[in-house]
Image (cartoon, rainbow, N blue to C red; front, side):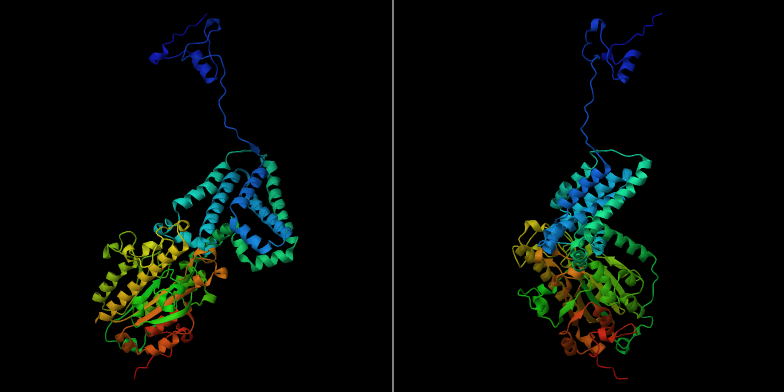
Length: 588
């Protein structure tokens, strides 16, 4: 018996026949009686194959070789430049070493990307290498553990000056798009059982080629690796992966650190104890100001005209503990000298602020930069309040925002106080934001964070204008402290590290210390002592001036501040105290 099923007209959106429905599901078509094609909107009996995007098929090793080739050829510009500089006179040695490092790249892909992890790992390594290569080529920076720390501990404001449209475009073209292409080819996957021996075999073969290349001339290559550390520090993605691993290890160790006291015997000395007024020290921690561009140090340009007109003690030969804030700032507040400093040791013991607080000082840290770097963990810290000076904070707060804070502190002081002010100073690359545009003395000044758009002279002009702004802030601070009758006041300024301004193709800072130029490791230091402070503390300014001519370093800060403020403690090392021998003993 035939079964007929009624159908409604398609135009009225009704039901279609079961036969038509099942045919659609099968991708089939229906014709009218006599083989004539159906009307428009109805099915035909012609099978239409879906359009598919062509996808090549590669083996797992084939994809790894392709990715490694791209990374080495396109994303290791600095590595090739340094390799040519070191081994360029011996093409055979250069080829052998290059083969070994190519094998290291394949080894990294094989080891971290077995099976289905291969494509995500390969894409991630391309992105890492692309970003590192861009910043090395743009600023000459190398990615080490402290650079990784800078990345993780930076602020949004600071990072947006580095992630410019040009930087984003370069990273998209060299990193994001190639990383996306990794997912295009099909991979001829082997069975799970096959993979149990294929993965370790791939790792072993890659390692064998690496070892074979290096041992082919081990004497030469071992010397290169030992003495020219910048070569492998520029290899990507290896250098960045290693830096990330070392940073993670250090962070994990820091969480388990046990705090040890420093200076538990700290107490006011006879001069401090006998002070008739509260004692105030304003300690400016400068940012990225190098000694070479500081007018008081003999720079060809007068970048410190205001300080030159005030009775300050200048220290022209001061060495920094590191080349980045994350290293230098904790180091200078620590009792550890540079030779014995490590972040682990710093985090496991108290620092200068703890000792000062124990001696009875009210300690306050106010920040216009990237934070206290865990120095004020126990004493507390605050960021600048933009409402103190809205004009100074019209775009980003310049260091003038500190002036109302100093004035307020002088008006309300009732206790011995140390006010630590962490400046934005000469933080790059946006030097032009560190000073009011209408007070730019050196022109034309580079008014962008993209150095590629500026001449070196314009970059230096902007940097020097920022030095002038620091000079104005320090001079205005001195004037306020000198005019106040509510405290015996002093001021110390010390920069955390220097800056490269294009010398040798380097810009900014944070170069590994073993290869850092002097422009990143020499910093300015200035001391001003009010008349009341000198009298109360029994300090001989002429003696301090004589001492200032000798070399000094960040190692001196911890001990010299304790000496300056007459804090008695066994934690103070007289050999590192710049005030030692310059105090007139109070009559008993």
